[in-house]
Image 1 (tube, rainbow, N blue to C red):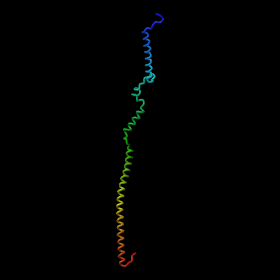
Image 2 (cartoon, rainbow, N blue to C red):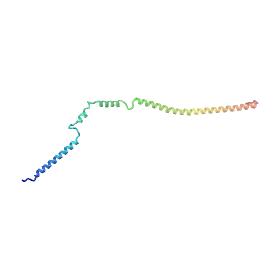
Image 3 (cartoon, rainbow, N blue to C red):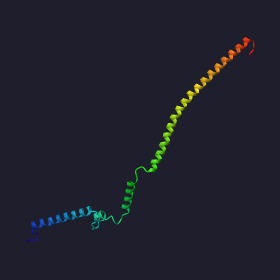
Image 4 (cartoon, rainbow, N blue to C red):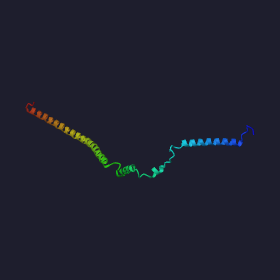
Length: 146
C-alpha cells in the first residue's frame, strides 16, 4: 500500500449505516419524548386513586344522597303549593260564578222593575180616568171643579 489506499467498501457501508441508524434513533427518541405527556418519569394510576377509593372524601357522596332523599321523599308539588293552588282556584271559581249569578239577577230585577213601572203607569192612568169621569159628573151636577 501507498499513502492513498482506497477505502474498503465494507467499512464505508458500515460507517454510513451506523450514522443513519444513530440519526434515526435520535430522531425517534426526540419525537417520543415530545409526544409523551410531561410526567417526569412517573406513571400515575388514575384507576387506583379515583376508580375505587371514594371512602376518603365522602362530602360529595353525602350531598348526592341528601339530594336523592329529597327527591324521593317530596312530591314534585308540595302541600303548600297544592293549598295555594286550591285557594286561588276557589277564589277564581267563586268570582266567575258570582258574575254569572249577578247577570241573571240583574236581568230578573230589570224584568220585575219593568213590570212594577208598567203597573204604576196603568194605575196612574186609571186614576186619571176616574178623576176625569168624576169631574165630568160633578160638572153635570153643577159643581164647579178646578
